[in-house]
Length: 592
Image 1 (cartoon, rainbow, N blue to C red):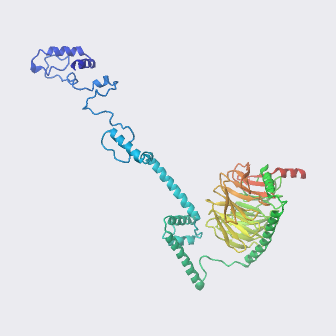
Image 2 (image 1 turned 90 degrees about the horizontal axis):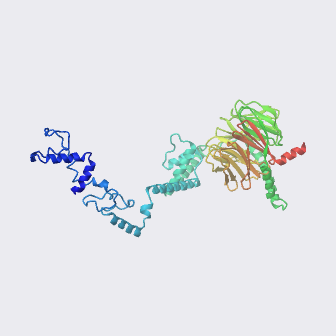
Image 3 (image 1 turned 90 degrees about the vertical axis):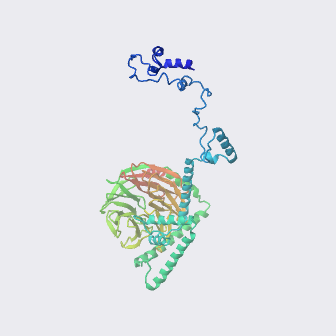
């Protein structure tokens, strides 16, 4: 062993020969002096024995085996390691640790055998495949499914729309009637989610008890109201004599119009020569051939509304400058400027009977004009700025929507306010009359569409489905379809017969500012959007027919003339664009 270690020691030292000579020279000295003479320092003289520093390097290395390891590191044989030294590769596991049972402190081979036996008997999917991340993903998925089911149940529940009823329901359920900064719609949504939670938790008895308490309170209030005075809710205000006469006139007008519409529909259905599909295909083909015919600067400020006259020879536009203008068609030549509003004009509409037009403004007034630019009537009464307005099909009444959460009905001849109608929890933005004249629809920033019966004054439908404010609304000439569009970028088609949404069109990539049905037969509808485009959709299957691209800013309004030969659009780029079909161009060429 010493013969093998001396070469290694001599190789590790820088001067092996000098060390051997020193050891041989000191061997002749007395035995007592041998330990101090062991250091291999050749420079120190033999006289200075008490001061030398002992260096045990030549003596200590023989009993230590680690210097042998580098020389045999490349040899993979394990038996050379002494049994007293622990195995260096023992801490490295052969397979990932098992999380379920605690591993016994024995050899790896036994542990692996027991694990394999357990896996063979019980299966390893629950132990090795389901990690913490998989559990979190599964929990998130289950939570999302539960939220979806809760939303479905929430929309199926009947929740009061009146804020006082919502507060009363919350009080009876033991919940706070209001939170800090909570609005009416947020309070209503909170009540909806509370009711869904009670239903999912199986606390239907509590919910039914709340309903019973509410009904009992209503009956008590009714009994008290009979003896003491008028009720607080529901309440009715006594209408004026003018309103009663207006309701009677509207009823007579609508009955005649509805009878004519139904008779025409029956005749077309029973007539074998009538081919409805061929007519729709022809109208859609004409709409698909729409091209940009003319573009004109309409004002110094962005344009907000446009409307065709009943014969299609005039186009009226409104702008944020407060000025409305008339344009002669089809060459879009400037005709008359209508000046009178002190704030921006928000909308304009032509009368369906006379060559009169009405404008709405942010100065809280609506004005009636003639084609010469003279003001005929001023309708004052709203408490906040106006949004949209519309003429009744008879031409005798005007409806205005305002940000004061109301819409109002005005008499065109006298300028008297006939009806102030509440019902929306937020600002009312759009208004439209049924072609029969019996109904009016309103939409607002509360994401709600309401249909009112003008003959009785009642709200007959509350159409919920939009998730954001509704800005545009239009009745179809067929009498039973209603289109609405809003800030959720969708256009919804409502069936008044089924009282629900018939179809949802993902129409644009930005909010929809206006919706209009083709006024003659309603074979197609057009939508204007803030994505700088207007689109034409089939009313049969609600598929896209044509995209009208050309504006460089938000498209705020549009209108359709006749059977769809012309479509006018206005936008924030201050331009009026007239889109015409090929058949209209050919007719113009023939007339010329």
